[in-house]
Length: 295
Length: 302
Image (cartoon, rainbow over all chains, first blue to last red; front, top):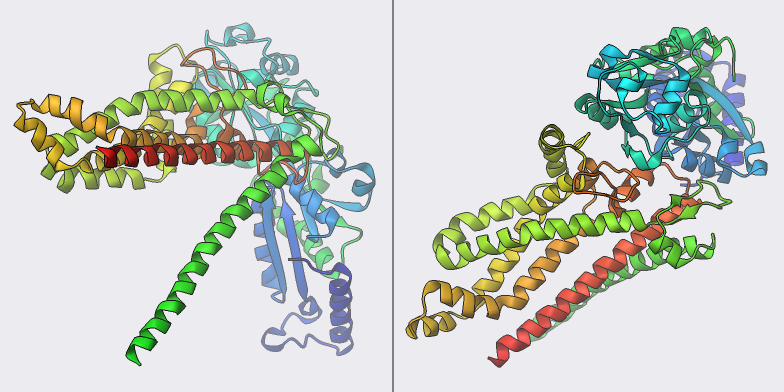
């Protein structure tokens, strides 16, 4: 489905103006919330599958307030979201990575970035190993993921072979981990077991002695089957992300092509509001505004 | 009058059914054309050679529109070939044995009991095989062998073998059942034992049908993504032993298709793999048609 952005925004604006001039919400049965009611339109969005649950939650909450706005959400991956918003196929493109990493420069420059959340990535290990090695230095972590360390006894653990369980190279989680935990050292792809999604990755790690991998913090909520590994003594947590001591995190982006129209802006503002922030943190994501030292 | 309306009805329905047939044909052609269009992008848009794609083991495509990576898919192709070959090696003897037992030794029991059991097997969704493999087979291999993780070629081929054995069995059984009764009666009449009848009469006559069953099984094994992907480990390395993890074509496509950007080099490389799978399955189907047409001729000439 293609929506003509301009026509849509003109329509939405016209709607806002008319209803505003008439003095009150005039949209039928549920005209209780006054001016807010006037928002009307459709938002289409696609992209990051990691961001999708969050977007869904936000859309559901948003629709409670603005029943006349319909929000169509799709996954497809960060790259797809970026390409589609750049082509004008969707209004909002969700991405784990900055647009510049996927799109040509001139295309990326047309997009406006809305940093809607922060996601922290933690290294996690099998419990057996995690009991002995609960913290690694960043250098040790790099050595493990680049294949220099192949047995846990080399970093003070038990005599068990290291089994790398990682994500495909197109994964946003992997991109974050590579950049901030491994200082852009590439993990050895020919020695690591790749897993399609973070849920399966956690299961593999909990079943495999000596396994180590990485997942986003939301997956570790209420999950104790694997041990999160501290890096240089700093535990992966939202507090440590906010206060700047834990480095392995990134923004979740929602891109619009040019400035968002009224309806889109209301939706984006809602996601970044304090009200939704509580839900966000409850799900293990971080609030972008709370991070002291931005990236 | 009556005849006329009947004839008219005939004509109408003939067109309807013909139309349905053409739709199917069109759909198949459309899928083929689309796959060719997307799958050749690796070679036309990004300028990679077909020999690089087929024989290089370096798979590092860029997920951008600029390209510049490497698209060697040999690891995936070899992974697919090895797991399917091993699965066939495991499944074929068991399947043919079971089919012989069902068709020749206990024919009535075979039809009433074994056949429905096998059919249920055919209908089990592949995710269930994969999940069972992941929760039972992989930990078992991990505990009892030198494998670090349990994810391995061995696990993948065992899962595949279990998945394709019902296919091979049921097709083989049909082939055995289609051997005319008179052949067996003739052989028994000449004083042959049951083993001699099976080995020297029934199996050679049903040979082509059995072969078709094996190829059908192989085709299913080649196209299976989910179950294999769950237990093979998806490590981008050539396997060194039965216990080492590797990756196959379908697994690689399934892992990355959601993450790549439409139109990027990575995306096109995956489409090329899909095209390769399409060509392979087309080849298998033609092979089956060739073999079964030969089988039909030899049966008729006897």
